[in-house]
Image (cartoon, rainbow, N blue to C red; front, side, top):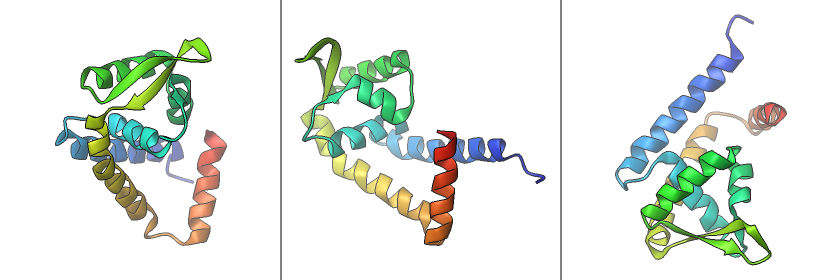
Length: 135
């Protein structure tokens, strides 16, 4: 095979991140912040810990802390000591973030649909299986 799969994956990832960031900019957000708003919105019924965000997005604790601190400064979320474990923080969206949630979710869902539109169900299954192999 003449093409470098790793490089292609990195290029695709960079392109997706760039698109997310460009859209997010109009709301004074980053693409990652949008994804966290979406994740917290979809898990609103259950307590979400910082550790859950670290696992969901495969990012280090220090990076997660920095992102969440910035979001807290922008009044997009609150972080409180978890009731069952003082070492953990429970993360909740603020009213300000909840107002952005439907726009964020709509964009993310639209992007997901665009990514999948040119592929058959079988191709998508195979591609997803390949991606999971590397995660």
